[in-house]
Length: 214
Image 1 (tube, helix red, strand yellow):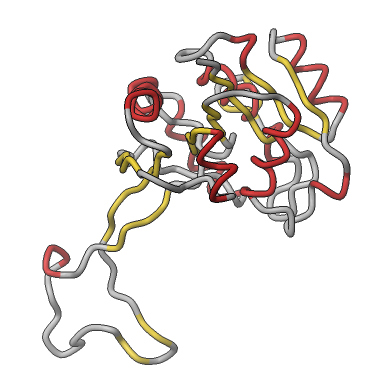
Image 2: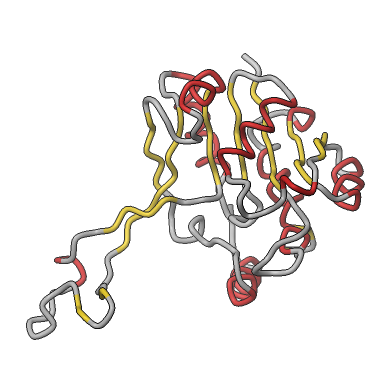
């Protein structure tokens, strides 16, 4: 069974400039993600997917493979499903792991649990966490504002963690989605759910990275 890891790392981020190159504990986010994958699969099975020669050079210097995408594959209209489909068109495998660099605190045990679930019987993994909110629609609360419920009384919202996807290639090719078929639900803890999209997210991640233990 061939298992490959992909780290999407375009250089033209729209919300946070060159965010995949930002360092966490001295390593760019995309190298951090690749090193994370190397805890569960061989380093030579990990591909940095990028449009930038600078990223390619760093990938090679750290012992990782690469695939280079074109500029039109770096726009926001090129979705995560599109991206995985393109990655699988470049290198064949039975199981694909897509680890986005913006979730830097995914644990080895989480990666292994997700991978084991797909190896054993599931088609894909849904990383998620639950949270409860006082939500509003425009100027109208979606709860009784005069009789405030406790947080444990609110209906929890299931939120997809958008930093890790594991899927059988056969299932992806059938459904064309990263989450498909028989889905294994993999819960993320509070550290793992940290996702860097804006500058304040990055500053927050940096502040906790010094004490984070995987």
